[in-house]
Length: 168
Image: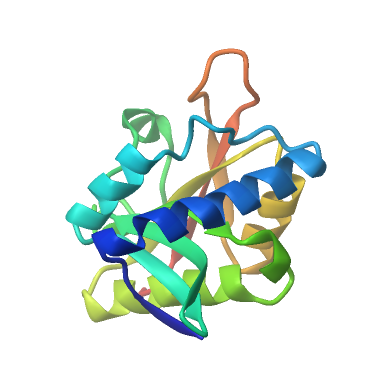
């Protein structure tokens, strides 16, 4: 398996990967994503900004992650440990359903952590849906600390904000 920056020619296969991931989430009663999000407009914008990475196995896209410095405005209400603004934000981490429990998500997150070190930054921030117990356990197991919660969609559960200090 390799992790690389996505190309616009990858878009169709990235969206197939998301479709697989979303159907698996729905089967597990997790209503975090649907056919409207993540969508190809958002992902193509990520690719154009060169912030989207794919996990590829045998030339097949099996996972993806966006890593940038853009945080939702509601993040400003969270009491982050790293107040230096030297952070990366993880968005839209997903793995093709048949590759769940094969450490692909973990490898993508470790890649993000290495990027923090490479760019001489300090931490990673992210949010995850309160109605997704699998993701909540996943981030805690990787050493991320719950810092509070925000509301991103009316009528939906809260989103928990997590942080991990990479470089003291």
